[in-house]
Image 1 (cartoon, helix red, strand yellow):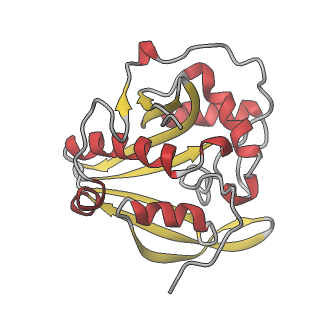
Image 2 (tube, helix red, strand yellow):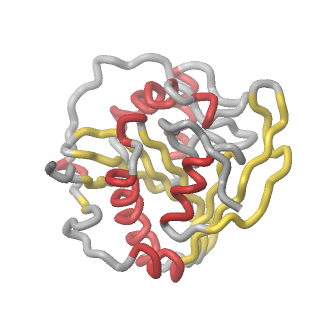
Length: 221
């Protein structure tokens, strides 16, 4: 079976932001808190505002857009990253090559640590984080509200040396991922736009998590 071609392009295309809403709808309960925007207009407005201060990448598999990675630098050596993939893109053959390509670029720019957070019960994203070298650095108790209840989140930290020790240096031409120019990204119109949601401001829960197509399981002790 032919291995899919996984590439990334920065920035995430402006015309495609509404698609993120459709991706989120299939697993909203796993990534959104109660403070997430409820309309497409709110989503686009808040997302574009965030994108103005973040770097963004679209993830493509065989020219199909299906993932979003963002990074916001908070000081000369540290920043915050968020990940989101539509359900059909979830799986190591797509997610790890895309993340590896983007994170190499971030680390090569001088960043030493990438931080994120996820709902405590989002076992899929916590396992993915471990596979690229991230560690769970603490429990954020009752960090936000989901379905009317206070919920915990897990703080994640990825050090440059841990990432390279596990994932390797790779190359920019492919192998475990590749870059593509923004001009070469597929720019078709999206005729299936529905509503949109946004990560809640209180817990910022939607971006750092991703689809969970398999039944959640408890992490091993």
